[in-house]
Length: 469
Ligand SMILES: *Cc1c(COP(=O)(O)O)cnc(C)c1O
Image 1 (cartoon, rainbow, N blue to C red):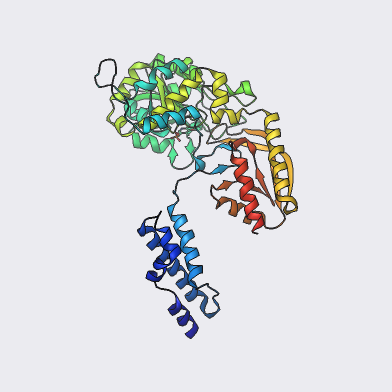
Image 2 (tube, rainbow, N blue to C red):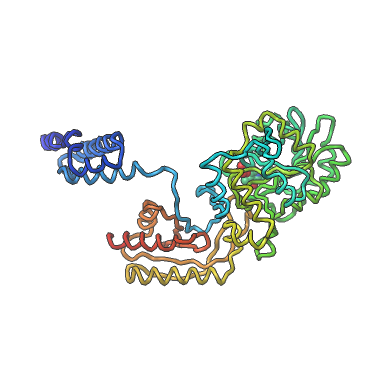
């Protein structure tokens, strides 16, 4: 007890810490507030350890050790909270890691627009007020074959906006097999309720027929909705109504038909050995009146919701007051425009839009990257690790191509000097953090999602971690 109190008494006062030469040096490049806060947190932390661990507590109390802690604390506190990480998981559209990586051209476009003024809502021809949506509308129409289009905050916003515009207080007919929930809080029935539309479910979980929709239509019906089951598949004894059949029914009944495509793409992935995912152009061509999808899933652009369809409907949406609340900012528009421009040349899009490039990366390239990374790890870490190059699977992720496990080559690392869990944690806490997958007692690095320069950083981190234990 006495020792505990004595230890507490021996702790230096904050003012003494702040007068230390090394701490004073910190003040040249860091605000006083941060340093003072760090010092008091460090002292408080030590105080708590002493109280908890009692007399046996082996806490360092000498000034120089405390100053070390303060310096590293200041360093931590000065780092941005939102920062770059290295994705070695092989999950291309990792929602927790920010989904799509933007193309260089899109990053440049943001840079250009962010640091200055722009013609965001100015028509440079007439000098009059313009609309922010005009910058991407023509491109969207050209790439999808639609009459009109706009971009909003995300696809959830698009769904909400479309339902609210076309069906508030009215009924919307949806198949029971398409009551989608997307990670987090996006669920069709909930969004429907928020939009003010009334959900009418038809069919059964595994089978819905055209006649089910037909029977549900009455004077209160405002919209027929089709939802792409982007993160699950119903297999076995199943039936769903095609977009074109639903479009025909809509025409017959004088009702608009809307498809929420979920991930939505402009590229036919089946050409690249990946499963076919319906393209926006196909949906438009099948006669659907309105289609929406995410901008940052398979599309490979910034977070946004893309809406295309009949001019008359798009005009109505633009006039909905909710659109103002769900609008995109200039950075998103700049990045989206740059991304859309790349799609006018598919070869360029596949090469330069990282999301698409990663998904379509040839086997041989993956093998070469894995071998190279593995060889460099062996060379750098020697007997501290055992390295194998194995075949494995990457995932598209982000609620896209649900069953799609894309074959890849993996660097599989077995750490001999620490547990795999400890290594995973150390890597995650480095700067920049590295995210890799644990499988049994090995840590897996999938080169598919690793960007230029990532391998160097991973190697340097591994070197530091293993040399210092
Ligand atoms: C992902 C998804 C959404 C939500 O899109 P966000 O862009 O994440 O808001 C909506 N519907 C479907 C079918 C989806 O797959």
